[in-house]
Amino acid sequence: PTGPTVQDMMTGQYHFHTIGWGPIPSGMPRIQSLLGDHGYVSMCITDCHPYFAPGANYHEGFSGFQWVRGQQADKYRTAPLDVSLPCDPGKVRESEKLLVPHLRNTVGRRYEREWFAPQVFQAATDWLEENAGRPDPFFLYVHAFDVHEPWDPPSYYVNRYDPDYDGEEVILPRYDRCDYLSDAELQHCRALYAGEIGLVDRWFGVLLRRLEELDLADNTIVVFTADHGFYLGDHGYMGKHTVLEPGQGWPLYDVIGHCPLLMRVPGWESRRSDLLSQHVDLMPTLCDFADVQIPEGLHGRSLVPALKNKVSSVRNLAVNSVPLPAEEGIRSYATATDGEWSLVYAGEAAPPELYHLQSDPSQAHDLCADYPEKAKAMHQQYVQFLENLDRWS
Image 1 (tube, helix red, strand yellow):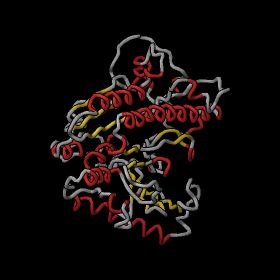
Image 2 (tube, helix red, strand yellow):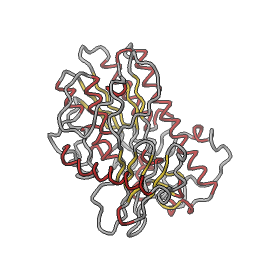
Image 3 (spheres, rainbow, N blue to C red):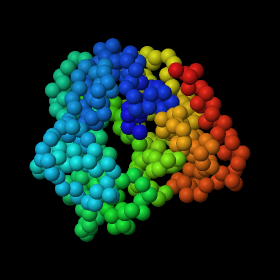
Image 4 (cartoon, helix red, strand yellow):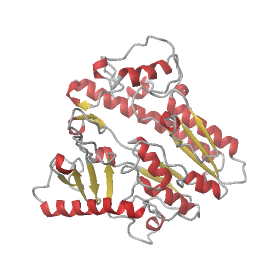
């Protein structure tokens, strides 16, 4: 989930087996601190309010930071007292905790620039304009909470995908089996999600264009990624991994764990890579690009040698997991993949599942019974990965 993924990106260390959603241990090397020690000015711009929760300290080590207020459950506004939900509250995930504050925080917005993603990317654009003439190099870290739900982009973004819909707007759906939604509502949720992506893409494009206008594009590396995916009816689910009732949990299929990673490096030709990587690899990769010594003992590995074809790979296994160890009685899944095969595993709480990703990317056909030796080999790799975590850190 979001918090542990941000920790992984900043520190180059896995956190799912130690602190979960907790604060980053004070003094742990972070990319912003390492670059700062080598003359970089660093800036964090985000509307993701958990960064600034008491004790969270995700913004530690930046030269400056800016919090765009009001996103989702941010305790920003106390009025109006009464807000109208756009759908039956029974279809909403924690309506009083998550949706009501969001609706209160967004009362009265009118122009597209007032939505959260535009505010975040405009703030980043303004920072670039203000700092473009500095003699020192910069590290700009921009985290838009969108396309997390609630999905409520301007209507013209949604109408591209579902123009004739006239039902309820389930903008923050309950995490559950998706059959509580009608077919039309489920399709509209997909349109809302796609519209939110369109909004983020449009304003990220504003930031990229400003890099060019300020003559920064030719000497600035741009890295674009996400923290996780979302089930929009895939495998019968709506939401992310969660516990529906005692003993229940959701498998972590690729739609949740396979995230985009795009990098624009000046002077490099465009290509698509099948390189297996994880969020922990971003911190040492950025150190490598900046010619900053990579700290010893990281879980992450720089992708630069492999991207330059000096080595064939940086890891032979990638793992997606909820925080471990699991609470007693809770079915907690992890997924281990070597890029070709994927093992979905919950210990003794559920039968393992095995998928061949090249021939079955949607993971519809469990091959565990057909290839038991492959499943055992994948499990052995996963166990070795877990055993190595303490030795690496």
